[in-house]
Amino acid sequence: MIKIDLTEPLIEKARTYSKGKIYKRSMRGQEGTNIGTIGELVLIDYLEKRGLKVIDNRNRSNATKYDLLVQGDKVEVKTKDRTVPPKPFYECSIPLYNHSHQKPKWFFFLSLLRRGASYEEAYILGGISYSEMEKKGVVMNEGDVDFRNGWVCKESCININIEELIPPEDMLDILS
Image (cartoon, rainbow, N blue to C red; front, side, top):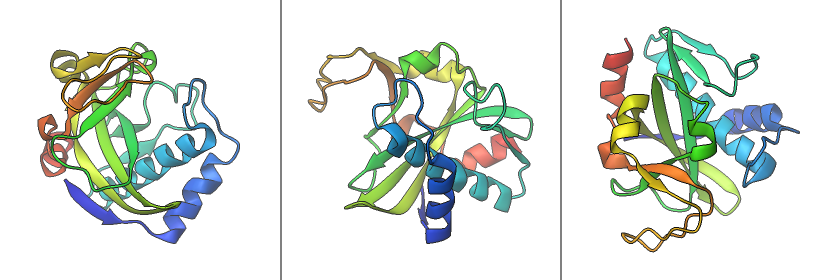
């Protein structure tokens, strides 16, 4: 897991991009778009600074299928907003309504640390291939209660623990 301090220019760039964009079935509306955009911008910056070629797919006609092309591989970025730093046993989620049409080669997961209304840090948690997510992910249906932590599922999803992801440094090697 890699911690990155968020900058005001990055936050403002995300706000500008997100303004007026609300995706169908979004639980958080425009703020959900903003959270996702912050994660995408953090990952783009991280990958490009390490010499990987990244093409931003978010404004193209097939944008709902994947976010980025990294070295030619389709990558979907999933970002969660948290009020505490992530721990290895915390979960990463993909809404099931997306999983049927989003079939990238890789998923990359990030967490944002929020204090009050301010996003201060991003954590690049790691990645997993679509096929491995299918094998290892735990499906939770709306209304299910996760016996491990008491969490009540509000939107059907497929979850995986952070500790089961490929670490970001190893993902760099895989994607290179």
